[in-house]
Length: 165
Image 1 (cartoon, helix red, strand yellow):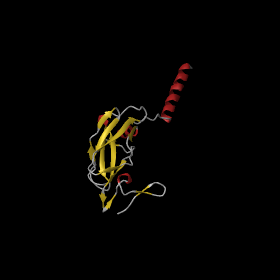
Image 2 (cartoon, rainbow, N blue to C red):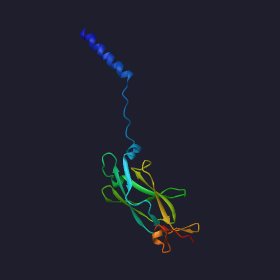
Image 3 (cartoon, rainbow, N blue to C red):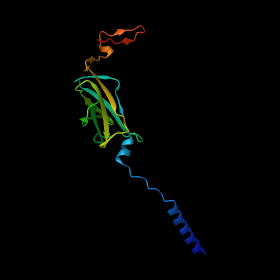
Image 4 (cartoon, rainbow, N blue to C red):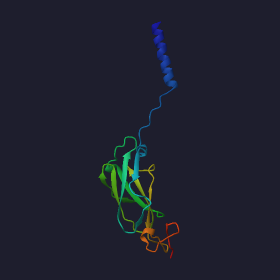
């Protein structure tokens, strides 16, 4: 009787195993590892930059769950001018301290630029691109930040107002 019970338990166990297979966990992919990384700009993204003036943009990159800094060989940066086709231009990045990277940016012309990060060679789709604005002559208009324009006047409420040419 004990032999019959043990066979019954074994058969029942096999039946349950076949009826409810255990799903294997998917192997981590490059894309899933990228989603686990947080890249944040350490500068004011609303800053307007000037043509042909190099600025050093700093970013912090860490593993989202553990907080471990991203290694320099695992991250790269590139930019593309808004509205232009073609491959993005790679930017050199140097590690300032663990998990903090400095990226030199020298815009060749005024307009909008998109700066993006790649983690371990995978475009970081989960990491939003940073939009950078560069002031200068665009289609006959000159945009000068109010703080740099000596002709900017204060309005009735003390706010700077722009003058147009």
